[in-house]
Length: 209
Image 1 (cartoon, rainbow, N blue to C red):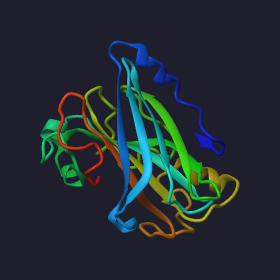
Image 2: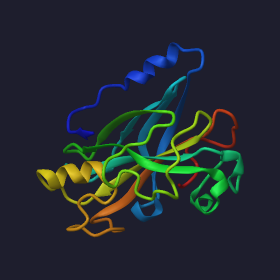
Image 3: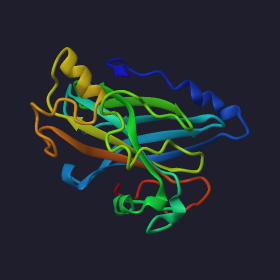
Image 4: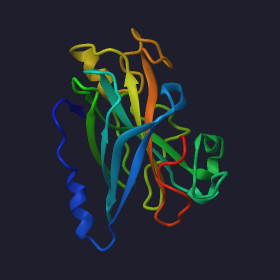
């Protein structure tokens, strides 16, 4: 999970040759707390017969700072308040069947840019400390028809050694000593949305998470 160099394209993207595979593209936006703007970035999500994989290219991050990516999966998007266009209000609805868990982490470069990549099988969850942070409430693995939101989370200025590893692998890694829910510490800063291939509503990047 500890990524400092440019990531390789996830191997599951090779499933594009599979008849069951599909590929979607989406833009990147900032959460309101981080400015609410549109980021010059993009994500590519591959859905295969066995699981999903993505790449996430972004910028407008702090320079040489630690960030994590998180899967937020809405496995029953038709049950969302706005069917097939899920958002944070749907976390109160158990019928949506939501999962929140770690995808990967890395340190941005000296220009505030980062390239993330991760993959996971259907039915799989990470098992590290603080990697399924809201279990058991939001611990559902990805299902093939899920709406998937990819989240970039900040972890404050870079630490070192075991503290840096925590910043790149845990939901609140690095906080403390950095504050939670603060632009100086652990806070969600960017997101990208991939609608379910089983139901289409609006653009892929027009909703907050």
